[in-house]
Length: 440
Image 1 (cartoon, rainbow, N blue to C red):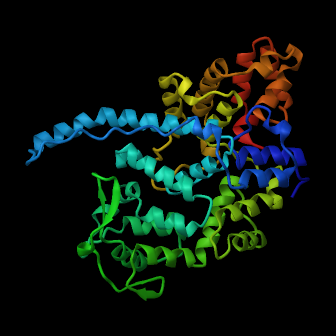
Image 2 (cartoon, rainbow, N blue to C red; image 1 turned 60 degrees about the vertical axis):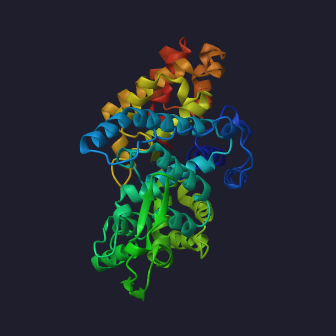
Image 3 (cartoon, rainbow, N blue to C red; image 1 turned 90 degrees about the vertical axis):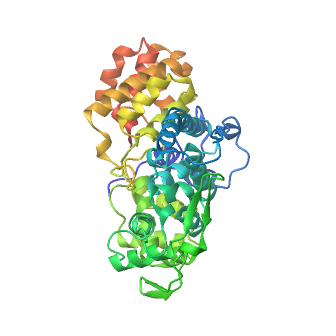
């Protein structure tokens, strides 16, 4: 490993990756690395930013007249729902961006975003934003504690049941989708289960239904396969609870979760065996997600200059919003939605159950142009007074400070210098610069 980055730069990296990017003045007030880590990961009390961004309301669907409905009437009702549901989905996404931008204690939102990419679920199939909000809230409440508890909730989450076809799973005709993805993508990883395990686990997950009247998951015992099943070599009358227990206790699960945390918070290079063992030990028998995260960022690799991570578009955007004290809802709606679509990452619409990619796929020429346009809009709309109030000769340094960056390369400085007389253009270009696109 090359010479580690400085303590100051390690704090910057910590605030950017474990947080959501610094609020104005936050880095100036930040203590050392360990104290900053402790503050970021401590249980959070009332958060004024959260209080200022209450969740949206989701109007109940119009009451339907009793009696049989013809296929044509059913189709007409579904078409009538499309516009309002799309508007609610957009509202939900903007609300979450506002919440992330406003939060004073950012870890709950940062981990909720992590779990959204892990338990990737799309409103495009689920259709009902209220169910997506319910999943989002569950991940926020449970996403920093015992992974077992979170996994127990996710396997019967109503949005997840719709997304992975678990809501029609019944004895005699088990759908394998939920069982397969829960093993492969959510708990064990590829190569740690067999096709027989999938088929047997699918039987254990039969019987769950989504009640659209109450927006809850309900269990219908009459269509549940009572077993017994044999999964991962264990035979029992499994149900959703005991199946998750079995998966989470499997030795492959802690290492799989540790790898996911590592890739998103530390480095694209997998941890060496000794480091992985320390991560697994920190995760421990309590499946402690926050302890795992703390151990990951304490690893020497976190301070390695080579451990740069490309910022996902949403995390890049939220960092820019936090730096300029700008709610996403203050941006032109078409500009925001068009930019997120162009960047390839719209909250609540992952491309597949595998979620969004990490790393270089975000660094396309088209994405760079889209990022530039959005950055210019943010800089023209948000509060950039620390830069505008600085003397022209000091504005490049003031821009780096505003964005929480240690500075810019000579090449970037040469591109920024002609814009020193126009603070908005200067900040917009800097937001889209490599130094702010990649967490170095």
